[in-house]
Length: 300
Length: 291
Image (cartoon, rainbow over all chains, first blue to last red; front, side):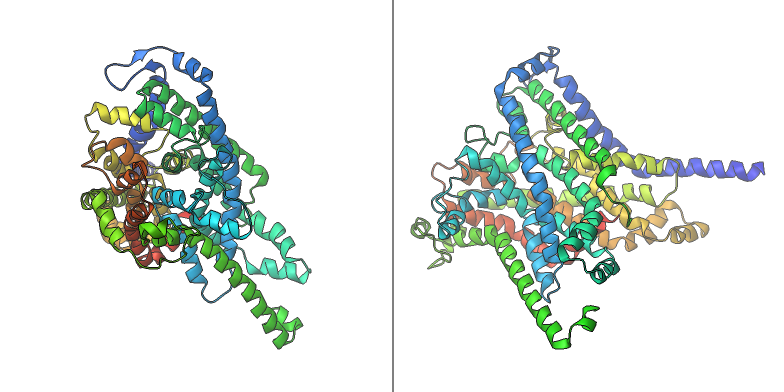
């Protein structure tokens, strides 16, 4: 019946237009606030631009200058150091928190609230607290370490420890992702554990062969989000160490910020942002691609 | 449980109690660690200058120096920064709730060709940019863009993008709206309601929990934003509390008790909101992570 078919197509077009109308703010936002700046990074990255006047086209000069700047390489090294440390640690801590929040004790709801709480606190305030908490002379951390006879550590003043201090700040925000892991834990059917118990499996074996495989989708999510957050880490380093000591916390985001807003090297900063985007997108895609080898979608 | 068949009852309960004891110990130690920054902030805020310089540090102040709070709020224009922060948060909440609700509606309640394909960029942007609207990848061109429009030193670069959708919130709303039976919309359509009426009268009331979650998360995000204000608000009359706090960091001799007192005041509203709406925060997480 040609009549009904025509009607159906007309309905489709109407729905298409209606749908596009509803999502139109996102389309505008996507192009204006994400696509445009990403492309602009590569365009601005080829110019000498101080933020005032007109950008001057200099082709690949910024990139050549970057590759010769040891501080640029230091910032990349620091950022990767941070990511390699913070992302796996973040996954372990989050799973640990989820298991803690899943304990069968009466007042567990209170523990959940407490463990989640620091992740809603502002990172800048948490960083302020950490400056004082990690103070080499009067800080609580060193005081507690002194109980077990560990000599005072100059957390924020010693290049060997400064990155670790910033990794530590991130762990206080793990309650959020921990809660996502908790939801995944609770979605695992108890019958699986019961069956394993009947077969005499130990707690550890049950964790490795039932829990962990079924948490892999959440682990994938955590790794990708952690990757982005790690590659873009800014506020804790800006507030706690300002990139020091000896540039040991000069992360790429801080390097971008300083060039763009303190040294008026906007073109150079854009070039770095472009490189950061490529690194971030590539790693996210690689992790996604790898997921088919290790992520278990069995329960979904 | 199964093991009750194997163990006699008293042995079973003994085992349970011991297991619970270990669990509790583990939980309490973890919680103490997670509370330590806030605890130390509060304790430090209440210490006098002399007690602050003591070693070993006292774990609770001998006398409570409440005047620190008064002094901290006079060290920087606290009330005006508080006003700016509230303004930023409120406008962000309005923008986020309005835009993401409508966008997610288009992504879930209307069937149109290409809908699910167009949702991929939403997911992809979550995974690549993670932080919205201001992040280190896009901040340089966005700053140039807003500077070109003469909008630096206003809240517009911070709040305008919130009216154009946030992928996290779109995802969260969409998950929620997909769970509402499509037959509700179809029945209303048969009754002659148009899409806007269905959205306003049927879907909106049913989406209330998600609306609260998005409002809370958007508000807290704005309150906690540091990078955005740092870049766009260079006039100190417009500073938010996040920028105001850094003033204590740049002082010649940092007065940690005042710095922590100020931090307390900045963090307190977030904690109060969190405790009042903790159910929404905790459930909101799973709402967004739904498979």
